[in-house]
Image (cartoon, rainbow, N blue to C red; front, top):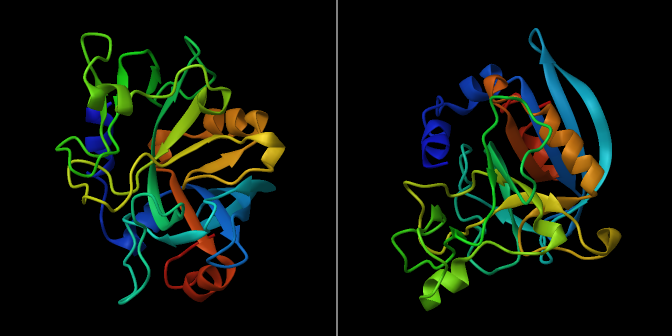
Length: 238
């Protein structure tokens, strides 16, 4: 998985070049910065044009809405930025990483990395740690307090399948800028917001993961409606 995350950072960093070279996009559009509800769409590029694949699908975002995250987009000067624990979904444009889950295998593109989560899988969310926002696999059952705190969720159906959103990714994760951002299964049939992830029905998540093709350099675009329309042309968005 470390190799996977490193590969994410190897893509071109020019925003225009990236959106032109990417040919798969997941798009979530909310009403405003404080909304925890959004509509999600899937797009695929045919030639130079973005073509809708499916959507809109109702999804949930952070309980407090969204804030600009650390992705491949420029952040406006003076804008509110995503912070650890603020219960906001990072907004902007992000690479999409590997999948994690409880099942031994899932339906996916052969090129998409998948890790079956065990009790020894950790995801570090402590901003003071040198492993901040990193996935670790330890050689023993968690025993230190930090290991137990970082242990990936066990026996929680909402986290039984998840897809990584490369917000503030290693090896250059900024402390307190936000960690552990995923797509995963929603709670309460969509009645509950999140701490910053994007959640959806299990069947929709499975379909999206099976559609993702790493060779097409998929990106996740998540913005309030007004921001999306404002930047759609310059950023070459669907």
